[in-house]
Length: 96
Image (cartoon, rainbow, N blue to C red; front, top):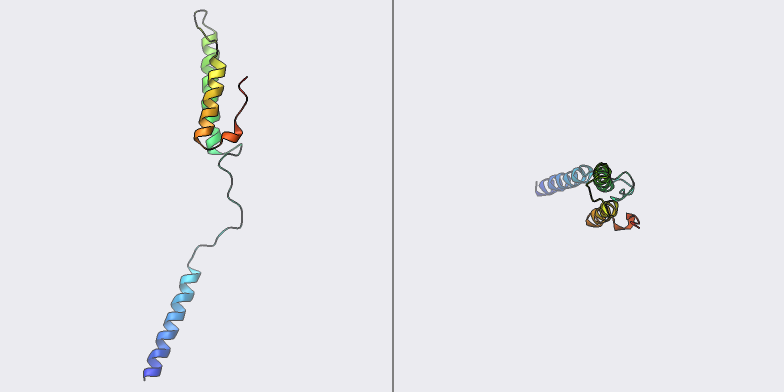
């Protein structure tokens, strides 16, 4: 009777271990995409801000009273700061 109980416990233990291994999610072999690729959310956010800033510069240029000196350069610098804050500093652009 004792052998039967030990055998039964062993079967239950092994069955539970096999079930636990099967219930884990499968891991993908595909590499995780970079957060800084051209279509990534980080770059899109910074690019949208850059475009908006440039739009403001263009709109201000239409006013005779507006001082827009350095406006485009400021937008460019803000874009690079945005990329740096999102750990995408390698994607920076030249602001000269």
